[in-house]
Length: 115
Image (tube, rainbow, N blue to C red; front, side):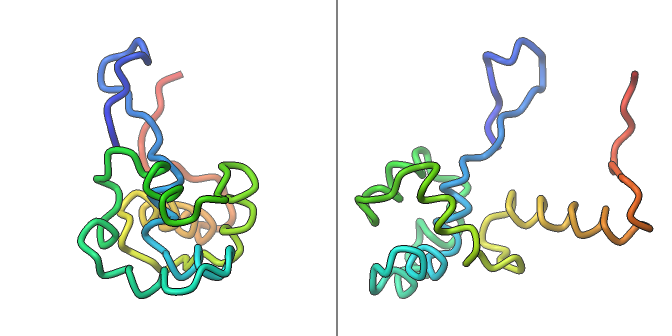
């Protein structure tokens, strides 16, 4: 995740671009858009760990010109592999959700929050 300079707080972080999660699962993108051959590119260097890409939305648009943020997300989401570890940010999000659901269905945050 990148530091967010406009957040007004030291140490604040921005959310990763959803597109980096999609680039970590090109099989899902291929299934959503029917673009043949995308899944085969998963082992290309930039798609093995896409969290580090500077502009993942532009990269996804190059692969799938018809991709649009909202409509594309709705198409891709049902196909995402929740066990995919190529995007560390996606992996940690899914792991945190799974962990919180396994703690007696109580809302759980692994950090202390000052109120």
